[in-house]
Image (cartoon, rainbow, N blue to C red):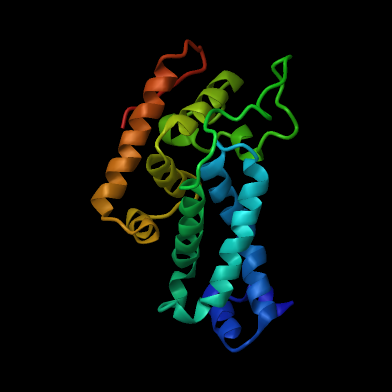
Length: 210
């Protein structure tokens, strides 16, 4: 259908005129990315996969209900992520048992379990730290756990920059803080990730110096 070729801004305009199908196309275009963003933020919580799905649904509902407040339709993506950010951090303020996720990861034979989140299986975060995309499983697990060990603010900044490709100014808009703060969180997070990787003996490890 022709709606598939419409820009986000055009679909926002249609939604404002009452075209629900247009917003459904916005959902289909962004739901996976928003879900993955939320998944990375809450991956240290028990039941995180189901919670991330619920949070994504809540974010899209809030976006639909408040789409009339979007000042610039060309900035739909940062605006949507801002809503998802608010939903996520409201959730993270709730009491919960913290710790590394035990469900998923590697099984006893060292193979990837089928239910481990797909985004941890790829090397997306590693291209920032290494020019070589193909690193061993040990390093992938180390990065996943190192990300989990970061503060929520550092983890979010890195996720938005590395996985979702937002500019520093866009991230600042999403999380409502100065650009300088965003850069501090990203670079401090990179330093912690690098320290973890450098502490692991591996012939495949190639750490880029930034």
